[in-house]
Image (cartoon, rainbow, N blue to C red; front, top):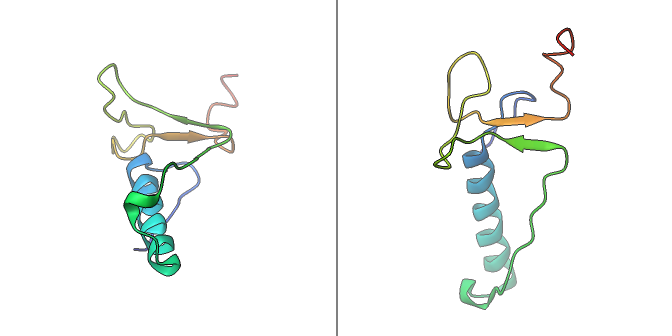
Length: 82
């Protein structure tokens, strides 16, 4: 699975799917059954996942693509407004 990350247009769904694929691959390589995994830690520093009141993704870019719902620290599009 190839994930293309664009600095200002990240998808929380794409990132979650990549994490799932990585954990499955690690379990396979380590010969560990998924049910043996007791927990998983995940952190995203300086990012904001935009969702509505129901937890559904809210678009960040002007394209209206609701899959692109993460604002990252390097997003400086509103510098003039700040």
